[in-house]
Length: 450
Image 1 (tube, rainbow, N blue to C red):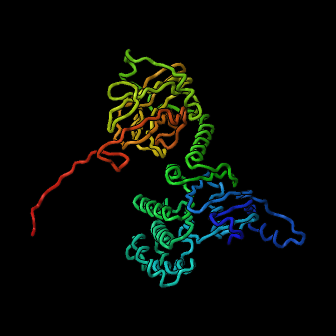
Image 2 (cartoon, helix red, strand yellow):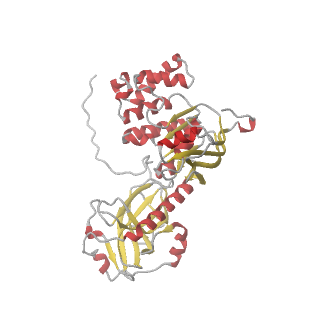
Image 3 (cartoon, helix red, strand yellow):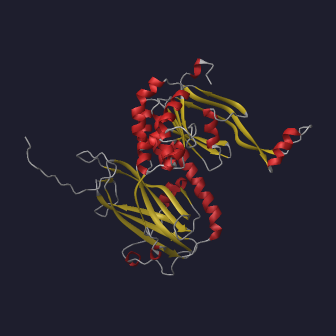
């Protein structure tokens, strides 16, 4: 697929009114009936996997594609790569595409990993000699040992992912397309893939990838496409689109689960000396409510009415120092009977969660749920340190109720993003890690061997 006009020379992919329709048959025999019927009677119904999609991706962009399962993400990628043909519309692609879609796609299961490397290189237009030069890097990156000489039908899903990504990452594509295939790898492999992808982006490679990891989308992508029921619901800056998607997912979760209610895992109420401290005054801050109005969502059964962020001297935090001890004082009011956990996240300038805390323990300690009736007021105070490099950070607050004993689902009473924004002063000497935790170091001099 080539561009017809030089006006698109800086465009990598152009999608124009793309539609993909599948025929759905209730019974297998209906497919045969429809194909043989003399009057072309239909026994099928149409399913629109994609409907009138139009967008442009420029060279060198990193694009995240998000949406719920069934939104059409994988179908879109398969059409761009030529695996599927569109029902209507136009797809224009400029440059060599390397794709990592379904694990093992393009591999011959009877051939060895080494043979498949050369096979994939041939498909992409490389000579045997060119693949010889790339082979050491591919084998080293895949890191599957002697299995490189075994038929790929013997490979685990992790081995498939390693070899497939290694091949596609080292054939110098103009466009790299990845569809959740990296999720099967271990953490070390995923980190290695992300590092390699960053190098490719710096070299000007256009990257499209489908992922459910919104944190990766925010930190890794320049733009984001949000698909819903086969339509392009939203596109734009990655952080804005990802946040909109998360808000809608939380709203749907609350709407679906609110009627289920929530019961305490224990009848014990939340008990802390803090709640009995007569020096603390509960307050409701109208300025805080106005500031976060566009950043909050939830059922409203319990809401944060004010937030105090205090420095090590007990004063309102303005400019934080490296590793400074701070207190977060959350003023919580109940508007209905509920049992909630209260927590916070501190995020960096890319909106990645760095550190945080919660009133419940990782084991779901029942005594840490805050139980309240309509009108009850609490102050929850967290004390933490900020072992963070210099820069801007924001605090998000979470008030949620458990929906199962494992903590796998929650009903959000109040989710407040950007509740507080602060700056940490740059520390000298320069720290290169985002979070610095002191480690014990031992240096032993063992003499001169000369």
